[in-house]
Image 1 (cartoon, rainbow, N blue to C red):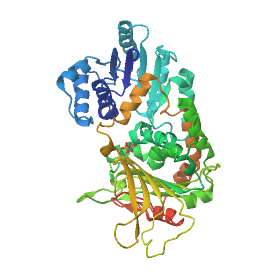
Image 2 (image 1 turned 135 degrees about the vertical axis):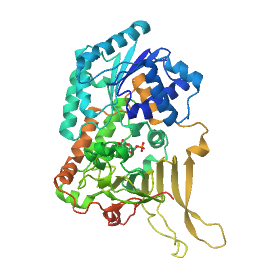
Image 3 (image 1 turned 90 degrees about the vertical axis):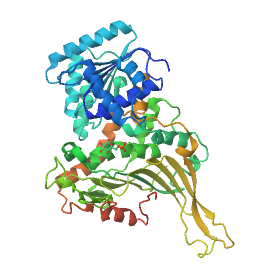
Image 4 (image 1 turned 120 degrees about the vertical axis):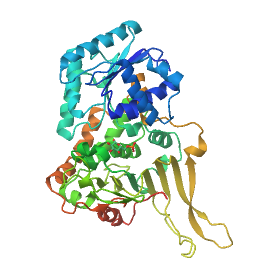
Length: 495
Ligand code: BG6
């Protein structure tokens, strides 16, 4: 790929996100030959650091967190020549002057085609401040040469998301704004579009006539760890469902785009969000479940309950688990439930999408033969296993006619020898090439909030009397099992 000279400014340069994700991603892009010929990475944060010290800091990050292990020193040295530091105190806007001088120095060296990317890896309350300072110091550029990347959370409800969109779009055009949802950069998530729209056998089956229900389950073994302060104000609904899980619903539910154009794809996703059935009070009672973990044992070690985590109130009402039954009211999906669940401190770390097909219209086999009967399932495993499985019935080898489910498996490990890039590598490259396909448009974010607001409000206004209601290392609250069991199904997991 031939890329214009690029200056990447990372706000929150010494923060966790840069050290764990952005710096390793940029270094890997460089190692794999994807960085532009001319580029500069400028880290900014409040504290005063020399370029040298900043380079050391991020090298430690890369060494600890890169998928490709420790850096190769010679390669690193070359990469590090492109890395700079400029202290900026967002609350003291005059410090933007030095940053501007730094940017202009590189611009002069790189020439008129230089593009500038601002990455806001900072607390969300700083997003508007930074955007306004960029505007004030005439650093916001234009559609062709300047982009801004915003991390989640994008607002904490519909109103704040709208406010933020309003501020951003008063300074930047929508074409310059890249709202990140890192799930969209995952290899297996990107493959959903390929699988659905590059194969002909699937489309005739991909509808209410053949599909019984859909499950999207993103479970995590870890607790909130040292993020209690942030998580207390968020909860599973805001942290995971509003963004990552609803994006997965969109990818499964969307109509076929007419081309691979960013706006065409995002239009089709918004259509799904707009078709999703709004929640009334009855739906909130019967179609949503919230949970919070209590202490338990994980791999032989006792772990604290959520209310005992650092930064968490002892009587916290924040949910660490959420399960919701959605419907998409359109011709394709009418009557097909989409069960979605996510939570922390669960039994397994796994992101799975399960499409369960309807049963055969008529059983020809006697019951002795079909003891292990299982309706066909398509299982898209996003992580940790990266695979697509089609569960079909087969005859067990032997003299008796006995059927049992078998998997036809497409497994990344067995199929490809190359390692998959990390989500942030894919997404950072997209920002550099100016491809917005895998980024959230303003209306996507707002539609997702609009859908969830009745649930957010109901959960916030009514304290859960049952919290904590699941043990660490379990599959979550019993009510979540009941939510799906009432319809005759159960949550599917991989062994
Ligand atoms: C983040 C959430 O967006 O996604 C975290 O804030 C969560 O709470 C994480 O743990 C999960 O991402 P992944 O890539 O580990 O599945």
